Amino acid sequence: QVQLVQSGAEVKKPGASVKVSCKAYGYTFTDYYMHWMRQAPGQGLEWVGWVNPKNGVTNYAQKFRGRVTMTGDTSISTAYMELSSLRSDDTAVFFCVRDRGGHSSSYWGQGTLVTVSS
Amino acid sequence: DIVMTQSPLSLPVTPGEPASISCRSSQSLLHSNGDDFLDWYLQKPGQSPQLLLYLGSNRASGVPDRFSGSGSGTDFTLKISKVEAEDVGVYYCMQGLQTPLTFGEGTKVEIK
Image 1: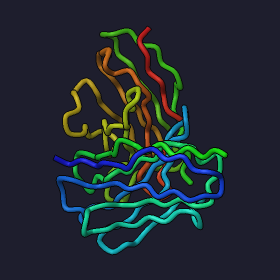
Image 2: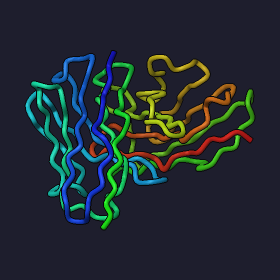
Image 3: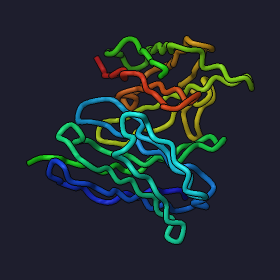
Image 4: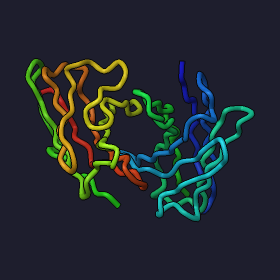
């Protein structure tokens, strides 16, 4: 069955970068866009952007442009989200989400907590 | 950006009783193909969000039929016909018509 497995929690200092991975199982990786969402502690959901694993085309939310890079490695069915110039308010759980793609289900990773602290 | 507004933000419920959540968008979510690009998610405590309804009123795979969605354009409603204890969590509406995708603030449903 479809499953998205994300990398483990990270602790980073302000100004550093973090790269979160999301390995896809149970479907053809290149057939669906992959979205990334952010959820600050106790807060709501925020869309960060998407990547098309087939061709590498990306679409980022304005507030993250210049700091975020989303990629996909088709050889290992894994999507990545790298966020640079980290600030304390970037502390959040990041989720990868497979686009519904016209089907009746969407699939979320388990989330990766990124803590930014000096 | 399309702004999504939910109400109420907190909803105490009694098991067996109905419940409803409203979601309003700052722009119409009606696509030229006739679909409303509005999804509903439930995030249970400590879990990732799960899709409940898509395109306004279509139940996602495996979602019980006590959940239903209605509305079109800018006004949408999620209804639970008879709340069960397992329905507690935070409900979010999300528009998928244009990027950036945007979410409502969330409605926290808890048992009275």
